[in-house]
Image (cartoon, rainbow, N blue to C red):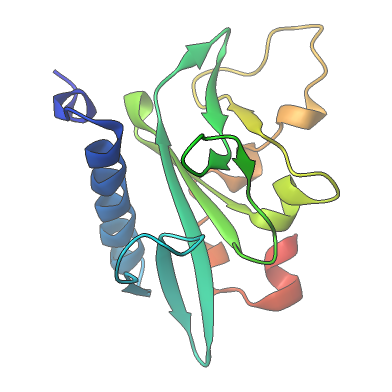
Length: 155
């Protein structure tokens, strides 16, 4: 059985994915901070000299077509969009294939916040599909983005 299937609720599974992210970031040499409670727009802080990188962590497993679908929504109803002024980076974990995507928030929240992303860690999109909107492969395992600040991170 895959580890992520053991959890009884999405909340428990989300907490587990946050722990996985914190462990991986620490192994890559970063200092991580976990805010008390869950009332902030982000899940994890990553210390960067005198700055704090605000990271929203998401884990998902829903496969649709050739890719995995990730919802970038939050709130009680799950219909609120994230705002680039509140989150600096998304850490997206594709659970079935154990792949991390570290995507700058500006890439997916500007000019219009996306509600969904489709990631293709196993195979590229099917031939004939417009791929630029789904081309997040450069962000796969992009741990170096945790060390970049300001404009460097938005690339």
